[in-house]
Image (cartoon, rainbow, N blue to C red; front, side, top):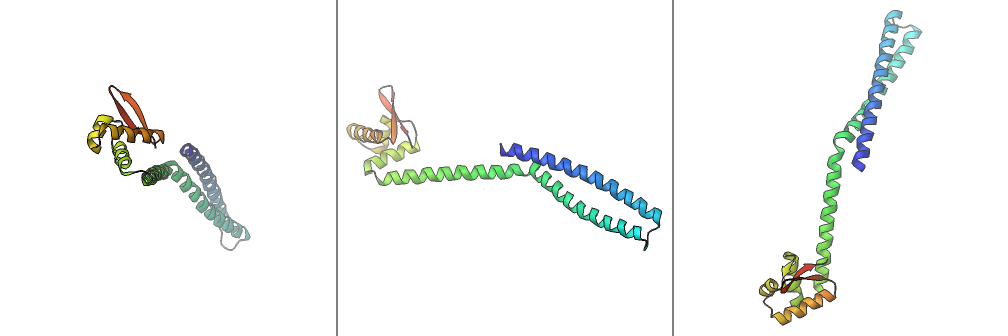
Amino acid sequence: MVLLKNKKLGWVLLGISALLIIILLQLMSGLDTRARDLGCFDDEGCIKIESTLSVTHFSFGIIGFVFALGFYLLFFAKSEEAIVNQLKEVKEINLKEEKFNLILQGLDEYEKRAIKIIKEQDGITQNTLRLKTDMSKAKLSYVLGDLEKRGLIKRVKKGKTFANYLKL
């Protein structure tokens, strides 16, 4: 959404600066013609033309800046948005990891083993989890039931066993 606004603003700035450049070029051309017609040296009219030319040079600098800003908004603002999105993703991942580590501190050894493996392999079946944790069926069933009551995992019936998913 912001990118679209930047693009529109970029086009507007480019259009305005192009229009102003055309106007200034015509003004300077007219001033040059008047200066030639007057045969300018120390004539009072020449001093006015010279001061007007100084203002137009300053105006070109400002218009150049507006043009460059418009160009930047059109073509380079995309990379900034990508960087911001990437930073948000990294921040979310770090927050999830911190939350997971805090939760681990409140669990016993059996629960820690089970939840770490569920995190590594989301949707792992209870039979496979039993083999990886080296727990008895009864112990694992008790541990998983306790983790489910706490809202840390979700168990879904899958044939004769359960698939286990992390809810964090």
